[in-house]
Amino acid sequence: MYDQSDLLKDLTKIFPEFASYWQADIEEDEDPPINLHSVYTSFLPFLWKVSPTPKQWQLVANHFSAAVEAGGDRENAADTCFLEALRRKDEITRTLRPLLSKKAKSYI
Image 1 (cartoon, one colour):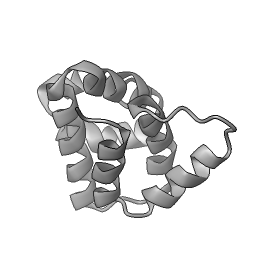
Image 2 (cartoon, rainbow, N blue to C red):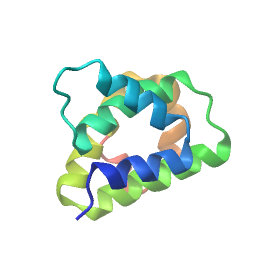
Image 3 (cartoon, rainbow, N blue to C red):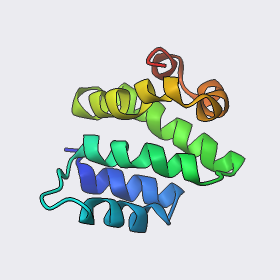
């Protein structure tokens, strides 16, 4: 079963600095929710702050396309905590949307 540790590992392969960002983010909460949704909720503002390379953008798109294809909790977390939120992040959407799979694009 794909869980938050798998997701963190996948995202830190793309952005090694996300590990420290995530750690700081969860330390702010006395009883942080540790699940797929909370990781994606933290990842969006992180992505807003960094300047991904074209290769990183493609890897992010591949990640979210795979998450949507996986279905279940993984799809739900990717959709509700990241892809739907892209509607409010025009700069990220313009860059990432063309790289996503057709199914992943349907959430934006």
